[in-house]
Length: 188
Image (tube, rainbow, N blue to C red; front, side):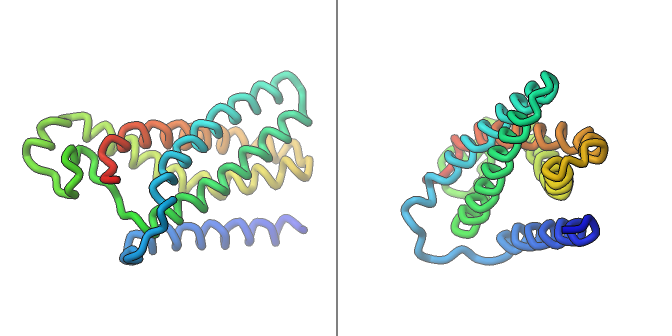
């Protein structure tokens, strides 16, 4: 596969994923929900936590010069991230967004609920917004980094990883933080 073809494929995949995620916000959920759907947020949180740890381990491996372990760790992280994406899409197909601070789980934030969470709500939304924006940005960076690394284009891999790695790690870690902050308000 040549670089030009692969880069086009990266942009197509990124556009398709972004379109699907946006469509999830616009399409009403199906009326019948599979029973396993409520396990997905917890699995997704676990996948993000695992990816965070694996990304740090991957950095340790490459700094020690263990290219094979670095490569295997990144392949596992990449596969887990793909599974995360599938589970995320599946969950949000059936369940719409949970409201941060919805203590009584009725989908409406009362004045008392807003007062109870206070400024924590702004912190949550800041973390969530940066997480979402950087998740969109990091997808093509991860794909190109992965391609360059697998093809042993070391100089090009290093150039892009300088950007993709910290963003991917931030997205993975903030995914865990978002999960921990929103999970008390799930209505299931």
